[in-house]
Image 1 (cartoon, helix red, strand yellow):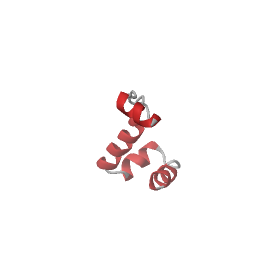
Image 2 (image 1 turned 90 degrees about the vertical axis):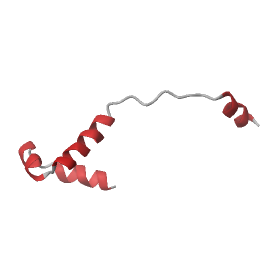
Image 3 (image 1 turned 180 degrees about the vertical axis):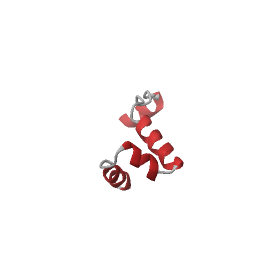
Length: 56
């Protein structure tokens, strides 16, 4: 919920205002959050043992 509030509170700002009001750490956090959204999800690894256990 905090992330949603943070995004909503910064949407009305211009890029210059954001750069002036955000610290370097906050900018790095946003870059990581927004960058992670572009990464594909990791490939699923199926285990034979897990599959057998699921059918028991």
